[in-house]
Image: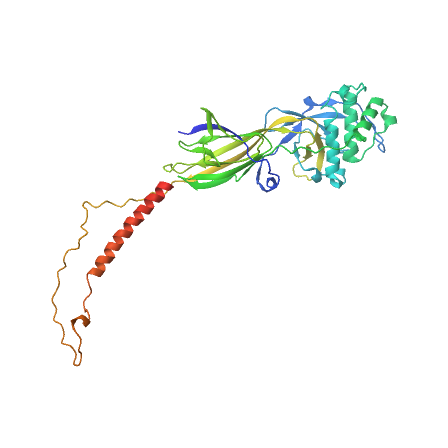
Length: 398
Protein backbone atom coordinates (compact mmCIF):
# COMPACT_ATOMS: atom_id res chain seq x y z
CA UNK A 1 0.00 0.00 0.00
CA UNK A 2 1.35 3.40 -0.90
CA UNK A 3 1.91 5.87 1.90
CA UNK A 4 0.98 9.49 1.26
CA UNK A 5 3.73 11.91 2.20
CA UNK A 6 3.95 15.66 2.52
CA UNK A 7 7.48 16.83 2.96
CA UNK A 8 8.57 20.32 3.99
CA UNK A 9 12.32 20.70 3.43
CA UNK A 10 14.18 23.93 4.10
CA UNK A 11 16.41 24.66 1.13
CA UNK A 12 20.19 24.58 1.28
CA UNK A 13 22.77 26.86 -0.32
CA UNK A 14 22.26 30.58 -0.99
CA UNK A 15 24.82 31.01 -3.79
CA UNK A 16 22.80 29.77 -6.75
CA UNK A 17 22.93 32.70 -9.18
CA UNK A 18 25.38 30.97 -11.52
CA UNK A 19 23.32 27.80 -11.83
CA UNK A 20 19.73 28.96 -12.04
CA UNK A 21 19.80 29.72 -15.77
CA UNK A 22 21.02 26.21 -16.56
CA UNK A 23 18.29 24.37 -14.72
CA UNK A 24 15.60 23.14 -17.12
CA UNK A 25 12.49 22.76 -14.97
CA UNK A 26 11.07 26.15 -14.07
CA UNK A 27 7.79 27.02 -12.42
CA UNK A 28 6.46 30.37 -13.69
CA UNK A 29 4.04 32.78 -12.08
CA UNK A 30 1.27 33.78 -14.47
CA UNK A 31 -1.25 36.53 -13.71
CA UNK A 32 -4.40 37.83 -15.37
CA UNK A 33 -6.30 41.13 -15.05
CA UNK A 34 -8.78 41.33 -12.18
CA UNK A 35 -10.87 44.49 -12.16
CA UNK A 36 -12.16 43.77 -8.67
CA UNK A 37 -8.67 44.51 -7.29
CA UNK A 38 -8.12 47.70 -9.34
CA UNK A 39 -8.13 51.26 -7.94
CA UNK A 40 -8.67 54.35 -10.09
CA UNK A 41 -6.54 57.48 -10.00
CA UNK A 42 -6.93 60.95 -11.49
CA UNK A 43 -6.42 61.74 -15.17
CA UNK A 44 -3.09 63.28 -16.18
CA UNK A 45 -1.63 65.01 -19.23
CA UNK A 46 1.81 64.27 -20.64
CA UNK A 47 3.92 66.64 -22.72
CA UNK A 48 3.65 65.99 -26.46
CA UNK A 49 0.39 64.05 -26.15
CA UNK A 50 -2.94 65.63 -27.02
CA UNK A 51 -5.41 63.71 -24.90
CA UNK A 52 -5.56 63.01 -21.21
CA UNK A 53 -4.58 59.62 -19.82
CA UNK A 54 -6.44 57.83 -17.09
CA UNK A 55 -4.38 56.27 -14.33
CA UNK A 56 -5.09 53.29 -12.12
CA UNK A 57 -3.52 50.74 -9.86
CA UNK A 58 -4.29 47.66 -11.96
CA UNK A 59 -5.60 44.56 -10.21
CA UNK A 60 -4.25 41.13 -11.10
CA UNK A 61 -4.88 37.57 -9.96
CA UNK A 62 -2.37 34.72 -9.94
CA UNK A 63 -3.43 31.87 -12.25
CA UNK A 64 -3.23 28.22 -11.16
CA UNK A 65 -2.66 29.10 -7.57
CA UNK A 66 -4.47 30.41 -4.56
CA UNK A 67 -6.79 33.37 -4.99
CA UNK A 68 -3.92 35.83 -4.64
CA UNK A 69 -4.47 39.45 -5.65
CA UNK A 70 -1.62 41.52 -7.08
CA UNK A 71 -1.55 45.22 -8.01
CA UNK A 72 0.57 46.80 -10.71
CA UNK A 73 1.28 50.00 -12.64
CA UNK A 74 1.47 50.34 -16.42
CA UNK A 75 4.99 50.59 -17.90
CA UNK A 76 4.20 50.97 -21.59
CA UNK A 77 2.49 53.80 -23.49
CA UNK A 78 0.03 53.61 -25.17
CA UNK A 79 -0.81 49.92 -25.15
CA UNK A 80 -4.20 48.36 -24.32
CA UNK A 81 -4.67 45.72 -21.65
CA UNK A 82 -6.90 42.78 -22.57
CA UNK A 83 -8.70 41.18 -19.67
CA UNK A 84 -8.90 37.79 -21.39
CA UNK A 85 -5.13 37.27 -21.63
CA UNK A 86 -2.63 36.28 -18.96
CA UNK A 87 0.71 37.96 -18.33
CA UNK A 88 4.06 36.23 -17.81
CA UNK A 89 7.19 37.61 -16.21
CA UNK A 90 10.16 38.52 -18.42
CA UNK A 91 13.55 40.11 -17.69
CA UNK A 92 13.57 43.87 -18.07
CA UNK A 93 16.05 43.76 -20.95
CA UNK A 94 13.54 41.60 -22.86
CA UNK A 95 10.79 44.21 -22.76
CA UNK A 96 8.66 43.71 -25.91
CA UNK A 97 9.00 47.32 -27.05
CA UNK A 98 12.42 47.68 -28.69
CA UNK A 99 12.22 51.48 -28.28
CA UNK A 100 11.57 51.25 -24.56
CA UNK A 101 14.03 52.74 -22.10
CA UNK A 102 14.12 49.26 -20.57
CA UNK A 103 16.01 48.06 -23.64
CA UNK A 104 18.38 51.03 -23.68
CA UNK A 105 19.28 51.05 -20.00
CA UNK A 106 17.39 48.21 -18.27
CA UNK A 107 19.28 48.16 -14.99
CA UNK A 108 19.18 51.91 -14.32
CA UNK A 109 15.53 52.45 -15.25
CA UNK A 110 14.48 49.32 -13.39
CA UNK A 111 16.17 50.56 -10.23
CA UNK A 112 14.58 54.01 -10.58
CA UNK A 113 11.11 52.52 -10.96
CA UNK A 114 11.71 50.11 -8.12
CA UNK A 115 12.63 53.04 -5.86
CA UNK A 116 9.33 54.71 -6.82
CA UNK A 117 7.38 51.58 -5.92
CA UNK A 118 9.04 51.43 -2.49
CA UNK A 119 8.39 55.10 -1.73
CA UNK A 120 4.87 55.70 -2.99
CA UNK A 121 1.38 54.23 -2.96
CA UNK A 122 0.41 51.45 -2.19
CA UNK A 123 3.64 50.69 -0.30
CA UNK A 124 3.02 53.81 1.78
CA UNK A 125 -0.18 55.50 2.80
CA UNK A 126 -0.84 58.61 0.66
CA UNK A 127 -0.33 61.03 3.56
CA UNK A 128 2.96 59.35 4.56
CA UNK A 129 4.71 59.68 1.19
CA UNK A 130 5.73 63.34 1.52
CA UNK A 131 5.66 65.00 4.90
CA UNK A 132 3.21 67.90 4.95
CA UNK A 133 1.59 66.98 1.62
CA UNK A 134 -2.05 66.03 2.11
CA UNK A 135 -2.40 63.49 -0.70
CA UNK A 136 -5.47 61.37 -1.20
CA UNK A 137 -5.50 57.92 -2.82
CA UNK A 138 -6.44 59.07 -6.33
CA UNK A 139 -3.74 61.75 -6.32
CA UNK A 140 -1.16 59.26 -5.08
CA UNK A 141 -1.99 56.82 -7.89
CA UNK A 142 -1.87 59.56 -10.55
CA UNK A 143 1.47 60.99 -9.42
CA UNK A 144 3.02 57.54 -9.04
CA UNK A 145 1.86 56.35 -12.48
CA UNK A 146 3.17 59.51 -14.15
CA UNK A 147 6.55 59.03 -12.44
CA UNK A 148 6.71 55.40 -13.61
CA UNK A 149 5.99 56.48 -17.21
CA UNK A 150 8.83 58.99 -16.92
CA UNK A 151 11.36 56.16 -16.56
CA UNK A 152 9.62 53.49 -18.65
CA UNK A 153 8.72 55.65 -21.66
CA UNK A 154 10.63 58.92 -21.20
CA UNK A 155 7.35 60.78 -20.65
CA UNK A 156 7.10 64.11 -18.81
CA UNK A 157 4.10 65.31 -16.87
CA UNK A 158 2.37 68.41 -18.26
CA UNK A 159 1.81 70.26 -14.99
CA UNK A 160 -0.33 73.06 -16.42
CA UNK A 161 -2.86 70.84 -18.15
CA UNK A 162 -2.91 68.28 -15.33
CA UNK A 163 -3.89 71.10 -12.98
CA UNK A 164 -3.36 69.37 -9.62
CA UNK A 165 -0.54 70.72 -7.47
CA UNK A 166 -0.40 67.66 -5.21
CA UNK A 167 -0.01 65.31 -8.20
CA UNK A 168 2.72 67.53 -9.65
CA UNK A 169 4.64 67.70 -6.34
CA UNK A 170 4.49 63.93 -5.95
CA UNK A 171 5.68 63.42 -9.53
CA UNK A 172 8.61 65.81 -9.02
CA UNK A 173 9.60 64.11 -5.77
CA UNK A 174 9.52 60.60 -7.26
CA UNK A 175 11.56 61.62 -10.34
CA UNK A 176 13.91 64.03 -8.56
CA UNK A 177 17.25 63.81 -6.78
CA UNK A 178 15.88 61.73 -3.91
CA UNK A 179 15.35 58.85 -6.30
CA UNK A 180 18.74 57.12 -6.15
CA UNK A 181 17.44 53.78 -7.43
CA UNK A 182 16.94 50.46 -5.68
CA UNK A 183 17.92 46.93 -6.68
CA UNK A 184 15.07 44.65 -7.70
CA UNK A 185 14.54 41.47 -5.71
CA UNK A 186 14.77 38.12 -7.54
CA UNK A 187 11.66 36.59 -9.06
CA UNK A 188 9.88 33.84 -7.11
CA UNK A 189 11.27 30.60 -8.51
CA UNK A 190 11.18 26.87 -7.96
CA UNK A 191 13.47 24.76 -10.12
CA UNK A 192 14.36 21.07 -9.95
CA UNK A 193 17.09 19.29 -11.90
CA UNK A 194 16.60 16.68 -13.19
CA UNK A 195 12.83 16.28 -13.40
CA UNK A 196 13.17 12.53 -13.96
CA UNK A 197 15.77 9.97 -12.88
CA UNK A 198 16.03 6.17 -13.11
CA UNK A 199 17.76 3.63 -10.90
CA UNK A 200 17.33 0.19 -9.38
CA UNK A 201 16.09 -1.25 -6.12
CA UNK A 202 18.66 -1.28 -3.35
CA UNK A 203 20.11 2.14 -4.10
CA UNK A 204 19.44 5.86 -3.70
CA UNK A 205 18.03 7.48 -6.84
CA UNK A 206 19.20 11.06 -7.25
CA UNK A 207 20.24 13.61 -6.50
CA UNK A 208 17.29 15.86 -7.30
CA UNK A 209 18.63 19.40 -6.91
CA UNK A 210 16.03 21.98 -5.88
CA UNK A 211 16.56 25.76 -6.09
CA UNK A 212 14.09 28.40 -4.99
CA UNK A 213 13.74 31.93 -3.66
CA UNK A 214 11.45 30.62 -0.91
CA UNK A 215 12.53 29.50 2.56
CA UNK A 216 11.02 26.02 2.36
CA UNK A 217 9.81 23.55 -0.22
CA UNK A 218 7.13 20.89 0.20
CA UNK A 219 7.30 17.63 -1.72
CA UNK A 220 4.00 15.83 -2.11
CA UNK A 221 3.54 12.39 -3.62
CA UNK A 222 2.64 8.74 -3.20
CA UNK A 223 5.50 6.44 -2.24
CA UNK A 224 5.39 2.62 -2.44
CA UNK A 225 5.84 0.81 0.86
CA UNK A 226 9.41 0.95 2.12
CA UNK A 227 10.50 3.78 -0.19
CA UNK A 228 11.79 6.84 1.69
CA UNK A 229 13.07 10.35 1.00
CA UNK A 230 16.55 11.17 2.30
CA UNK A 231 18.77 14.23 2.35
CA UNK A 232 22.16 14.44 0.66
CA UNK A 233 23.81 12.67 3.62
CA UNK A 234 21.44 9.70 3.37
CA UNK A 235 19.49 10.69 6.48
CA UNK A 236 15.71 10.17 6.22
CA UNK A 237 13.71 13.35 6.57
CA UNK A 238 12.26 13.92 10.01
CA UNK A 239 8.78 12.50 10.61
CA UNK A 240 6.61 15.33 11.91
CA UNK A 241 3.29 13.49 11.85
CA UNK A 242 1.50 10.82 9.83
CA UNK A 243 1.18 13.13 6.83
CA UNK A 244 4.32 15.24 6.89
CA UNK A 245 8.10 14.94 6.82
CA UNK A 246 10.60 17.72 7.34
CA UNK A 247 14.27 18.06 6.49
CA UNK A 248 16.68 19.93 8.74
CA UNK A 249 18.59 22.82 7.16
CA UNK A 250 20.53 25.94 8.06
CA UNK A 251 18.45 29.16 8.16
CA UNK A 252 18.47 31.22 4.99
CA UNK A 253 19.72 28.49 2.70
CA UNK A 254 18.11 28.22 -0.71
CA UNK A 255 19.28 25.02 -2.39
CA UNK A 256 19.02 21.39 -1.36
CA UNK A 257 19.39 17.88 -2.72
CA UNK A 258 17.14 14.94 -1.99
CA UNK A 259 17.17 11.27 -2.93
CA UNK A 260 14.60 8.52 -3.36
CA UNK A 261 15.80 5.56 -1.28
CA UNK A 262 14.46 2.23 -2.61
CA UNK A 263 14.84 -0.99 -0.55
CA UNK A 264 16.69 -3.99 -2.00
CA UNK A 265 13.62 -6.23 -2.21
CA UNK A 266 11.31 -3.63 -3.79
CA UNK A 267 9.49 -4.53 -6.98
CA UNK A 268 9.92 -2.35 -10.06
CA UNK A 269 7.99 0.88 -9.63
CA UNK A 270 8.00 4.66 -9.67
CA UNK A 271 7.26 7.69 -7.52
CA UNK A 272 5.93 11.03 -8.78
CA UNK A 273 6.32 14.26 -6.83
CA UNK A 274 4.76 17.69 -6.81
CA UNK A 275 7.14 20.26 -5.35
CA UNK A 276 5.55 23.40 -3.95
CA UNK A 277 6.78 26.63 -2.35
CA UNK A 278 5.12 29.71 -0.93
CA UNK A 279 7.16 32.63 -2.23
CA UNK A 280 6.87 36.42 -2.37
CA UNK A 281 6.13 38.18 -5.64
CA UNK A 282 8.16 41.31 -4.93
CA UNK A 283 7.66 44.85 -6.14
CA UNK A 284 9.35 45.68 -9.42
CA UNK A 285 8.63 42.43 -11.30
CA UNK A 286 7.87 42.99 -14.99
CA UNK A 287 4.95 41.14 -16.62
CA UNK A 288 4.00 41.25 -20.31
CA UNK A 289 0.84 40.22 -22.11
CA UNK A 290 0.61 38.70 -25.59
CA UNK A 291 -2.03 37.12 -27.80
CA UNK A 292 -1.70 33.40 -28.64
CA UNK A 293 -0.22 32.96 -32.11
CA UNK A 294 0.67 36.65 -32.29
CA UNK A 295 4.15 37.94 -31.48
CA UNK A 296 2.77 41.40 -30.80
CA UNK A 297 2.66 42.18 -27.10
CA UNK A 298 -0.41 43.98 -25.81
CA UNK A 299 0.67 45.40 -22.45
CA UNK A 300 3.42 45.48 -19.83
CA UNK A 301 2.87 45.91 -16.10
CA UNK A 302 5.10 46.35 -13.08
CA UNK A 303 4.18 44.84 -9.71
CA UNK A 304 3.48 47.64 -7.24
CA UNK A 305 3.01 45.72 -3.98
CA UNK A 306 4.43 42.40 -2.74
CA UNK A 307 2.12 39.39 -2.62
CA UNK A 308 2.49 35.80 -1.47
CA UNK A 309 2.21 33.31 -4.31
CA UNK A 310 2.38 29.53 -4.65
CA UNK A 311 4.86 28.14 -7.17
CA UNK A 312 5.08 24.45 -8.07
CA UNK A 313 7.04 22.00 -10.23
CA UNK A 314 6.99 18.24 -10.87
CA UNK A 315 9.60 15.48 -10.64
CA UNK A 316 9.60 11.66 -10.78
CA UNK A 317 11.81 8.65 -10.03
CA UNK A 318 11.59 5.18 -11.58
CA UNK A 319 13.41 1.97 -10.69
CA UNK A 320 13.79 -1.65 -11.76
CA UNK A 321 13.95 -4.65 -9.45
CA UNK A 322 17.41 -5.62 -8.24
CA UNK A 323 18.90 -8.68 -10.00
CA UNK A 324 18.50 -11.97 -8.09
CA UNK A 325 21.82 -13.57 -7.11
CA UNK A 326 21.68 -17.41 -7.32
CA UNK A 327 23.38 -19.10 -4.36
CA UNK A 328 25.40 -22.31 -5.15
CA UNK A 329 24.23 -25.53 -3.44
CA UNK A 330 26.23 -26.75 -0.41
CA UNK A 331 27.86 -30.24 -0.75
CA UNK A 332 26.22 -32.95 1.43
CA UNK A 333 29.56 -33.94 2.96
CA UNK A 334 32.94 -32.33 3.36
CA UNK A 335 35.34 -33.64 0.72
CA UNK A 336 38.60 -35.15 1.91
CA UNK A 337 41.64 -33.00 1.38
CA UNK A 338 43.92 -36.08 1.20
CA UNK A 339 44.22 -37.34 -2.37
CA UNK A 340 43.63 -41.08 -2.90
CA UNK A 341 46.44 -43.23 -4.20
CA UNK A 342 45.90 -43.52 -7.93
CA UNK A 343 45.89 -46.87 -9.69
CA UNK A 344 48.85 -46.98 -12.03
CA UNK A 345 49.30 -48.99 -15.18
CA UNK A 346 52.67 -50.67 -15.69
CA UNK A 347 54.19 -50.00 -19.08
CA UNK A 348 57.22 -51.56 -20.68
CA UNK A 349 60.03 -49.10 -20.97
CA UNK A 350 61.67 -49.00 -24.37
CA UNK A 351 65.32 -49.94 -24.61
CA UNK A 352 67.65 -46.98 -24.52
CA UNK A 353 69.10 -45.83 -27.75
CA UNK A 354 72.58 -46.98 -28.46
CA UNK A 355 75.22 -44.69 -27.07
CA UNK A 356 72.70 -43.20 -24.64
CA UNK A 357 74.43 -43.31 -21.25
CA UNK A 358 72.24 -41.69 -18.58
CA UNK A 359 70.33 -42.99 -15.63
CA UNK A 360 66.70 -43.53 -14.79
CA UNK A 361 66.30 -39.90 -13.65
CA UNK A 362 66.90 -38.67 -17.18
CA UNK A 363 64.12 -40.76 -18.71
CA UNK A 364 61.16 -38.74 -20.10
CA UNK A 365 57.57 -39.43 -18.96
CA UNK A 366 55.41 -40.54 -21.85
CA UNK A 367 52.01 -40.45 -20.02
CA UNK A 368 49.95 -37.44 -18.67
CA UNK A 369 50.20 -37.13 -14.92
CA UNK A 370 46.83 -37.30 -13.12
CA UNK A 371 48.07 -34.67 -10.67
CA UNK A 372 47.59 -32.00 -13.36
CA UNK A 373 43.76 -32.29 -13.63
CA UNK A 374 43.59 -32.83 -9.90
CA UNK A 375 45.40 -29.53 -9.32
CA UNK A 376 43.15 -27.75 -11.83
CA UNK A 377 40.07 -29.11 -10.10
CA UNK A 378 41.23 -27.93 -6.70
CA UNK A 379 42.03 -24.50 -8.17
CA UNK A 380 38.55 -24.19 -9.67
CA UNK A 381 36.99 -25.20 -6.38
CA UNK A 382 38.93 -22.43 -4.63
CA UNK A 383 37.95 -19.89 -7.31
CA UNK A 384 34.29 -20.81 -6.88
CA UNK A 385 34.48 -20.23 -3.16
CA UNK A 386 36.16 -16.86 -3.74
CA UNK A 387 33.45 -15.79 -6.22
CA UNK A 388 30.73 -16.78 -3.79
CA UNK A 389 32.35 -14.74 -1.06
CA UNK A 390 32.70 -11.75 -3.39
CA UNK A 391 29.06 -11.89 -4.47
CA UNK A 392 27.85 -12.20 -0.93
CA UNK A 393 30.02 -9.30 0.14
CA UNK A 394 28.80 -7.28 -2.79
CA UNK A 395 25.20 -8.05 -2.00
CA UNK A 396 25.68 -7.18 1.63
CA UNK A 397 27.21 -3.84 0.77
CA UNK A 398 24.66 -2.95 -1.89
